[in-house]
Structures are given as structure tokens and as C-alpha cells.
Image (tube, rainbow, N blue to C red; front, side, top):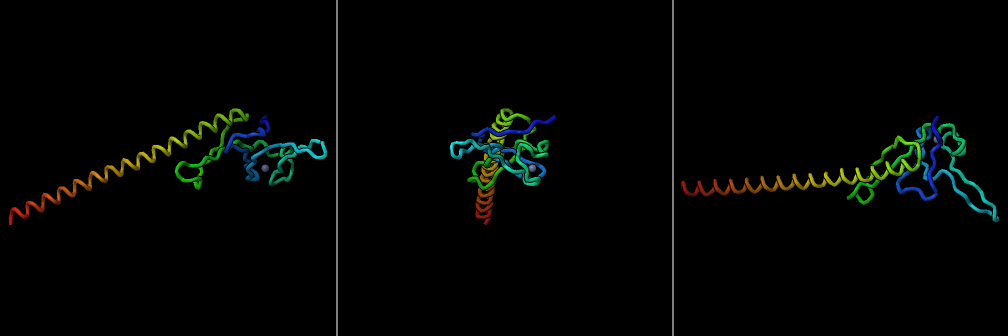
Length: 142
Ligand SMILES: [Zn+2]
């Protein structure tokens, strides 16, 4: 049976729990506040059943999920991934792996762009040289 997913008080940046029923992103799963010296446990509420996270009946569709900024977009573009793991520690290692993936992928995209630019530049130069040769030929023929 699936276990309820938990986040630690200091969660890994960009990692949260996503509920596929109420479509809610949980950035925390429980926290403690103190009131008049008394410890009070707080929990987020499920967006659909309005129940506490720990009693949400939909926990079997809760998934760890990562949201990562795409490099070079100033945080305006993000990529997300759902991690099929059950423990917080596994989710953190998956999240780190995913962060690297996004970085690598976008780095090679940048490299590819500059390669295309270089090829384009080379072609334009060749075309110019060819035009100059043609001009010289025409001059010689006249
Ligand atoms: Zn829910």
C-alpha cells in the first residue's frame, strides 16, 4: 500500500507534493507553530475534500514533483517532472538528477544554436566570395 508522502521542514528547493485529484501543489505537509507555549501542528488542506493532508483520502495519487527554472530564461520558463518514488530522500535524489538533466539539455540547445549560427555565417561568407568572383569575371569579360 502506498505511503503518505512527506516533505521535511526544510524541503529541497523546487520539490513539492502534487495531488492529482485536487491539482494542488503542496510545498509543506506539516509544520508546528507555538501558541502560548503550546505546540500546535498545522497541516495543509486537500483542495477537493477539504481534509487535512494526513487524512486526505487521495494520498495514493500524491506524487513528488520537481519544478526547475530553465537556464537563460530568468525563471520565466520552468520545466516540471513527476517522480515515481515513495520516500522524500529518493525524491531529493531524483530532483537533483532532473535539475542536472534540464541544465544539460538546455546547454546543448545553446551550443546547437551557436553551431547553426556559425554554419550560417560560413555559408554567407562563401556566397559573398562567389558573388565577388562573378563580378570580377564579368569585368574581365567586358
Ligand atoms: Zn488532494
